[in-house]
Amino acid sequence: MDIKALLRGAKTELAESGISEVDAEHLLAHVLGISRMDLHNSVLVETTLEAVNDDEVIEAQFFSLLDRRINHEPLQYLTGLAPFRYLELEVGPGVLVPRPESELLVDAVLTHIKNLPAPVSVIDLGAGSGALALAIATEAPDTRVIAVENSPEAVFWLKRNVSVIAQSVRVVEGDVADVLPGIKCDVVIANPPYIPDAQLLPRDVASFEPHSALFGGPTGMELPRVFIAAATRLLKSGGVLVIEHTETQAVSIAEDLALDFESITLHDDLVGRPRWTSAVRK
Image (cartoon, rainbow, N blue to C red; front, side, top):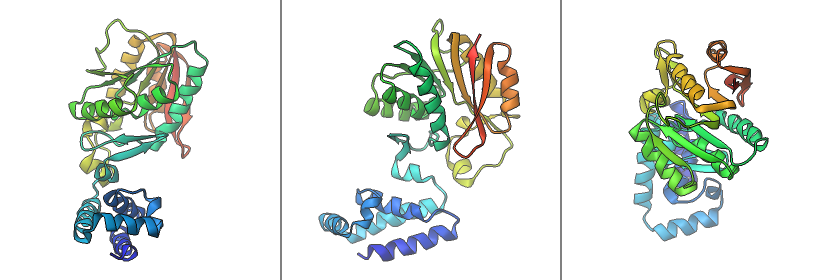
């Protein structure tokens, strides 16, 4: 099998569809069961091909995945894995793909946790695949983390990741509006659906990722307000809320927080867009 020729043809097809050519390498590496970087190790590739000993099967699997990617199915759904900070999370249909823009948010939470006496209690509202909850649980092992999610499809992936990465994380399936009655915590992370219902999204997202995790109502603020109310109920006085939002919602978020929170601070994501806000419960 001519791996280089196979990749050249696949990259051309992806480029013509407006998709990153690098995805061809990710897909072929996935089919071969090696890392993307290992594709450049000709000896290892030859050894792998000899072990499989069926070029037709490899090509059929690769072209099947390539066709799905050209149809804009997310790469992470095809490989079943999504990197986030130091983790590899299992993902698939029904759960939002973790975004690298959220990694700075985790940094800020970890910095805050260091200044608190252990153990620090953290509740992740709208945990999805568990990216934020598991990053905090693994990088700050003295924390007690609860991951809340109401979508059965997302809970499947959340429980799967928790079972492999950090079994100490408690998974709670329920609506943020009334979940965990009587519980108080030090930190709440909220990643609500916040996109306005009428906003157009890239085809990869709009056609495949769960709309319930994306759209926050007619203005996009309806569901974030529910999450803010939940955080208000769950946080101790002096506890910290960190909430994600679009770059255009900062003022609305700050206004909604003003009644019950202080030290309201806007933060930028990796590309310099105002993307999340922190606040201290009065």
